[in-house]
Image (cartoon, rainbow, N blue to C red; front, side, top):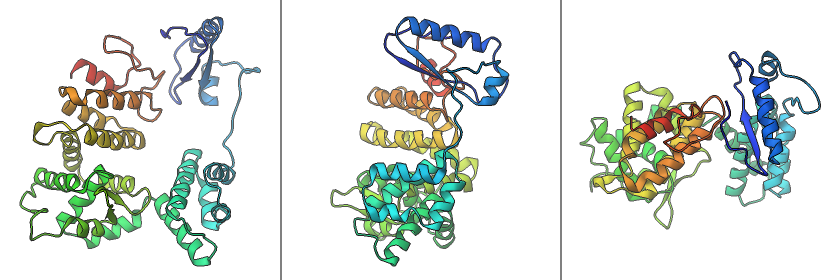
Length: 350
């Protein structure tokens, strides 16, 4: 079942399925593999749920550790304190809204909240000593944690201009890229959606800086464009994907796949930016549809091959989007049944 080499001085992590019926003899196979690794000076860690372990006939001795969920607020405090040494920020963790969200959240959401607190703290160099400063700090963190849903709902209701919406999506896909690249991407998306006559970059239209202001972004001195709000890119993509038809979803997939190759000249930097977005989407939505679309668009472009392999490796190793058992990415000649759908699609050229 486990065909990895028993390497020396290594730790192996096996992510067992969280649900369903465990394979017959699973515990015995795990024990045999652990003994094989032990002989080679390595060891095995198995992560599973108590119900799955019991269903598989697992034993309970000194080698089995049952871990319960940590206190959300305490986990939040430790995470933030490790990265931020500012007393004013740490005091802000005791805000009632922050504490309520932390205590009600699952551990992965607590970590997301902590990372947002860290990001907003780094964006806010001024001391939060005043009541107004602390209120704005907490408000921005909470809005970002709630994925800016209320703000985006209002924005789409009030902004019916297609050029604004296209530019918002282009910034979400290519945040950190040069503004002219983002503008061209917005025009290309408009063409794919049947809006080719918008003329976003024409002299009669709003300029890049005006468009950036409209979508809560800014053009920095190096001409790259960034959102002003924390975690806004993620929120925009999630909002659009949940609020639009499957036709729009497929158009977005094809658009992202084609972005690195304007005029058939592959751009590795753009591909890297797109791959980051696609990996994030695959993890959050537990969906390999977007990575598979990248396979179709990039697999025959030699300059993009390394980026594609890195993307598919990350997808395959991801607990959210990878295979249901041991997530090991094999060379294409391997027949391992543990490869992810996306990696298999790339290897077979399907």
